[in-house]
Length: 228
Image (cartoon, rainbow, N blue to C red; front, side, top):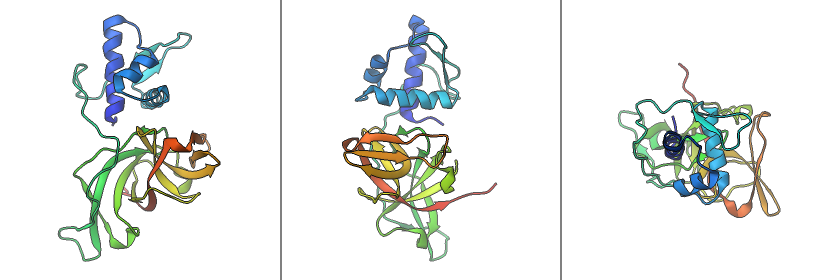
């Protein structure tokens, strides 16, 4: 599953390779996707590479190879419109045919627990949870994609319950929006004018940003796991 920005970039690279035989530059990719910085392009390319959609060609600058396209996607299909901010009616509602202790909250697709992905999109899906799992404020749910929080017991495919807020204490696990473009789930640490987003997997390095590049969009208050 790709986010719309990942899909948009993949199709842009594929079109340019087929038209010119040369990968687009990072500046061209940044402009084509309307991103503010090339760091966003680097993160998107890293995510596509991890998922096996592209490959960097050794010993060749700017050389990318498209390995596959999303199933059922035509190369010239226009990318879906997206939004960069979580926005919805977070008011819990009683789940139909559920007991009195169960409520429904909005489910906002998938969020990376590894490389940051495009910010969360609005959706009409809901998930039923015990009312006791709700935080003090409005809540929403996210599906986890990635393994960078496994040492805190947050696994790929889990559903996390997030209390909507714009501040958090050091050490809390938060949904962080980076450059108003991409969201990730990490432990928050502040150090002077910088914020570190810390994974819970020794295979990953902390991501360090100037504080004005990071917005807190919620904190972790619960987790649901389905066993198959």
